[in-house]
Length: 502
Image (tube, rainbow, N blue to C red; front, side, top):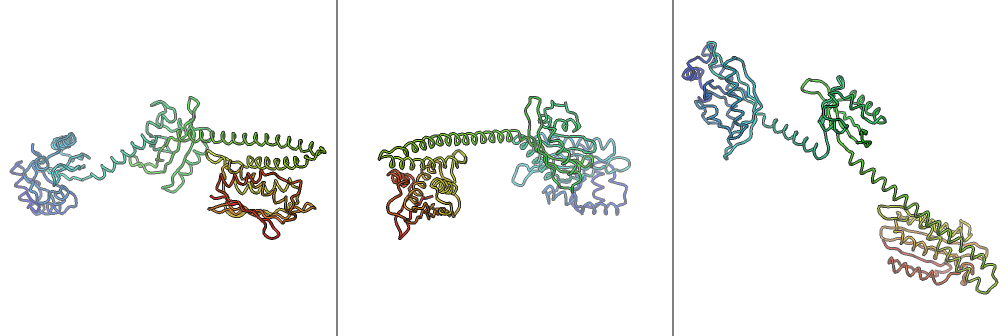
């Protein structure tokens, strides 16, 4: 029977199938009832409680919901008009509806079932997944069930969303050691995933339903912070997230590192405020972090020890050289002055190498030296060892710092020592005064170091005479590191420029 049928037609249809009136209402009231049901926003249909569950009427909303607009289903059995898919869930839904009808005929009480999966045919063939909640109410006539009114609600989106959420929770629990819980602060009831017990070292069923045993296993140093955070979130506005990170000592002497994020929410089961959230086991992450921290500390200690040993060795070498120089100074042989000069130059070069080692710093898997620190330290060292007043040596550093490989820094240190020594050799007056300017300009493209001195004499001071080794070192730097060196007099001053590419 199609939409808009009269109450009398419905009554006759029911009488033909069940020999009973649809209801005890007068015809006018039945017409009003049918008209109201026809316009209802929910899906409704009427069927007989016979073996076929024969359909006698349905409203527009039902046709729209089942995507069967214009299809005449009146007179067909329910599962003839809407055949189920050939799987377990379709059969289970049919059985549930039949059982509910039998029980309703016996009890004369409404029945509410679902959600059940009952797929519908698609226009292109096959089935489309649907999930339903169904309310069935008996239509009474003369004390017996003459028909049954079924109101169906399509809850497919709700069911699929729940399944997706459950799938994501299971995947998260398996891949990231995430476990879920809710905690009732008034009763101390603690509902949680089984893996939470494992995190705390409990055997299944050992801890019980309360949270107290779990609090007892938190590290004593972390427990006050946990209690304070629980108290804070209980008084905070809804939506405030509680954050806990704490340790749980294990019976084998190890520790687990747990992270909890949770917030207050109303439990729909009992309408109580509960703390709902997740446990994340960070033990592996924290263990690896601590291992890396220990390895880094060990490497830093090794570098520090190596620097210390190298500096000590160089200090011994310097002491021996100084002793030899003192002996030669007392010698009256003609070659003593040149020997002393050579030893003095060698002393400066070893001192430059020592400065480089003292400035080394660990960076990843290599040791680097700050270019700015290296230049400043070498200028200070040469000024101090030569005895010229500090104000006679000016240093200017511009641009961002640059880290040098330790090998490059050692070579550059010796070169700068040579440049400073050369400036003193030609720029120191007989009174022991000098006017030396050192500038270091660092850019992303290059590092430019310039040493300028006033030309006091064309003949070098004997005490600062050096051999050809200095020139050889300068040439080696230019060859090994693509550096360029330009030197020469410019009027009354002598300028040496060193350019080191990036």
